[in-house]
Length: 445
Image (cartoon, rainbow, N blue to C red):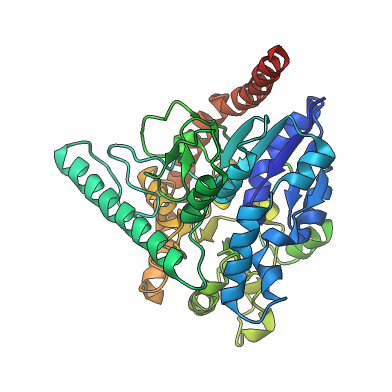
């Protein structure tokens, strides 16, 4: 059957969020091909999918290793964006009948405008469009009520947010080293003089949206604040495959340290954004010192590949440091998960019924908004990574462990809504019907 090309941001969270969808389409006979960085090849091929490495022409990290200055990186990237085609090799080799494009890579959609290939964009976050009573996902505000004051508060948050976005785009465009992808996409459209109309929606939390293109949202619909959904968008929940295979050697290692007589707390703060490496390290030190005083608690700490366990001294015997762990397996065993608020981990915790304590790490991403939704649905608590003192963190951990049944019951209710929705199966049917409609129109032409 028809090949489907997945173009997903090369992070574990984004890729993992796409795999259940890819497996479902593969089980229906579709050939699944991923276009990504070489570092993602092993992970993708282990899932049984085809893989094509992304051209070096569109990888700033590789370009930076070949030139003398960051100014040259920007210049080369812009030249390649205007003069070359991100999808050319994949289309030539596989002739896909559908492209699923991550909204984090949405700007490359301009390279597809002259192609007669259907496109569906894919977002791993909650709905990003500006909506009444729902703040952008960078905001920590919780709209408990729907009155004029709440509406005004959210409108004001949106105005500031959109002004900051516009200002950042302007500064990035004027910078000798930063790339403004919005300006670059518009520049491409001007120079190519394409007749295809690209209706951009810039009133979004993050990356631009396409009003005339379907968008799949891979975060759980029931986890979001109550809201209306734009006509071109649909939720697919839950996309996390909690039965996916994990490294048996890592599982065996974890089994050695788990104890039925201890409360187990698992902490992982991600490692994608290296700008916050030191913030994570400082927070881990706070946690280690807290567990030094609580021998009845056990901490499994996933540091990330950019932090070495040997760099932490005076680690008590109830704290266990790893660079990576079999996360699903650990969450199943844990009484509490401490996280930075990534959507993938949150969904896993809901499906595995484990309460959360979230400390947003990056205020520019969806982490503050995800933390707000955790509090709104009463499935956990949130904190401030930098300002919370050890005693405050300790009290929040204690509150969650002592009231675990309360939070678990709320999680069970949310999980039941997610599983009963049938959104995932409906989403797969939509993808295939969208392909069929486009194929029929193409045949008629």
